[in-house]
Structures are given as structure tokens and as C-alpha cells.
Length: 404
Image (tube, rainbow, N blue to C red; front, top):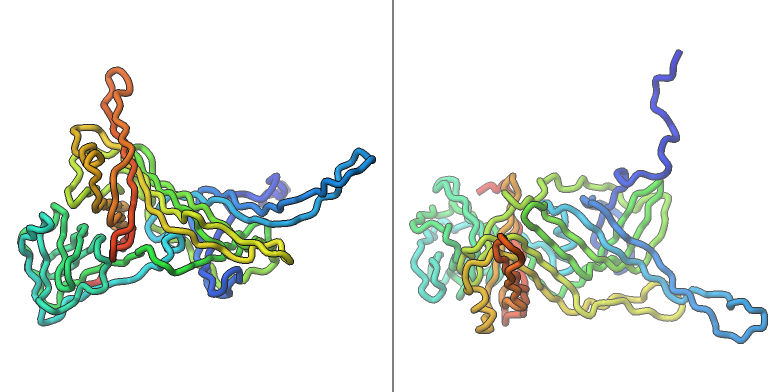
């Protein structure tokens, strides 16, 4: 009788498709926590452990180099992935020196907001009620989602605030007439604002029956890119304190990766606002770079692994590439304009991310006639700067399903 089972020994080695990478936040730097870990979605990784080796320059007649010794160890690399909602929030919080904060505002039963023109911002002013601070949990600028089942309202818009009792939407999509019921409307603004909270992560990599445990993981840079014809991609550069191979995992559970759809350039691109004005030109590519300038590891005698991690200074940069129509953005560069730049991204199931530079400028314009019969394309770098009281950068996350 012929064999009917699966063929064994067919693979030359462990398969990349079977690799699992999961993370958990550390309470103590460099110590892998026990408990629940979150699996990441990834398209690849380049993590590696390297030891710096030194040879004494001793004079020898043997024509042989002196024996090398290990003096320092570094563990680092990059993780790449296709961007989907909720997948990389922990990494984004780490590079921002913050955490994902759930801010949900329910209208009090005695409050009936109304909309009025806001001459100081050129938008519309959403007033809660004088002296009642229901917007106090919001960052000074970012994105807000208002949901009301009764009013059949569900809208995400960029905003900036003034005082404690109102929000000023800057989006053209915000309704001109609005009757929000008392106690029936929910404002949702899950946010990551850059701060001063040091966060390190443990990465577990399940590979060939063992677990590579990398502790003291610090995200030094995240680059996010979405462009015409390509899905959104993310690259995260991570430094670790140490790496160990374990036969048993410290994780009691590994939660499945977020099942959301990958953000694509068709349904995924929302809009871009510069200084509160919806960009008229068509965008070809957008890039966001969050980094820790000057971050690095410190080493001491008596151990190969790093003794500690320097957090560095937070920086938020970016780039936009658009079809050139007029000199509006160039004039902003020429006049040294600084202000809000806000980007909305969605996935096909209704999840959304809002990205806000609170005090940005447009730099290094590149406007070229590339070739015969081509459309002129303009590229601008986005430079993020701190804004007094507003920070430098804010990310807002909006899940598709919200229960008002």
C-alpha cells in the first residue's frame, strides 16, 4: 500500500512563515515580563546580536594575530510590516515617550452643544457650555470623532482648541447645522502625544522550537510610508539591551495580531490639512518619520550588555509629494510659515488614524519638470517643531465600532 501521510524532511530549514514575533511592555528595563504578549504582523525583520571584538596590538615574532576578546555587545535591527489599525500602537507609543490614552467624552445631560462661526480659526466653533470643561482630556490639537445614533452623526475632523469649553473643527466635512442631544453624543479621541515617559519592550521570536528573547527594546525610529500604487508600510528601528535563547517562553499567552485590513492608497487615504485648510492638490506620496535624536546605549565594565539606554530628543518629520498646481505651499515655505499639518488615514473597514504636527513648517521644496509629457510633481519636507503647551506630535486612533 502506498504512503498517504505528509512527507517529512522536505524543508532545508525553519520557514519564515512560521516565525512569530510578540511584544510586551517592561516594568523593569531589560527584564522580560511574564504574562500576556501581543503578536505583531510583519513582512520581515533584521534583528541580530553582535559582539565587538578587540585584539591587543602586541609585538609578536610568530606572524600571528593576537587572540581576540569580547568587549561589548549590541543587539539591534529593524522590523518591517504592512500597516494595519492597532498593530503597531505599542511601538508608536514607545518612540513618542508616551502611551495610548483612551479619551471618551459623553455629553452631560444638561449640555446641548451648538455650532457657531469661529473667526479666529476660520472654521466652526463647537461650544459645550460656558465654564463646563468637558473637553479637558483632549490634546490641544488633533482629531476628534463625534458619534450620535439619534442624530445619525459619525464624523472625524481635525481640531484645535482654545480655552476649556469648546473645540474648533477645521474640516470642511463638519456639518454646518448640528443638534447634538443632551447625553446622547460621544466624542472619542484615543491619543498618543509625545511626552517624557520612558518605555522599553521585550520582543519574543519563536523560531525552530526555541524562543529568542530580546529585552530592553527601545524604538529609536519609526518610518511610515504610503504612496500611489502601494500599500502603507512601516519600518521600526529597535535597540535591545540583551538577547537570550530560551527553551521555554516567559509568555503565559500570545494574543493574536490585530485582524484589521492593511491600509491601502485608495480607501486608506483620507485628507491632508495645512494650517486648517484642506489641501487642494492631489497627493502622490506621504511619509512620516518619528525618531529619538541622540538616543543610544551606555556601557560599563563587568558586562557585555548595555548598562542603560539614553532616550534622546523626540523629533517628528515627514514628506509630501503632490501634483503641482500653484505656488501655495511654496509661498508657505518662502514666508517661513509654521503651523498645523494634519493627515487622516483610514482602512476599508472604517478604522482611522489622525496624525498631527502642532507646529510644522514646509522645507526643501523640489519642483521639477521631470520629462516630456509628464505632470510636474512637487516634494516638500515636513519639519516638526515643539509648540508651547501643545507638544510636537499627536496620533489619534479611532476604531470602526463605537457604542455611543
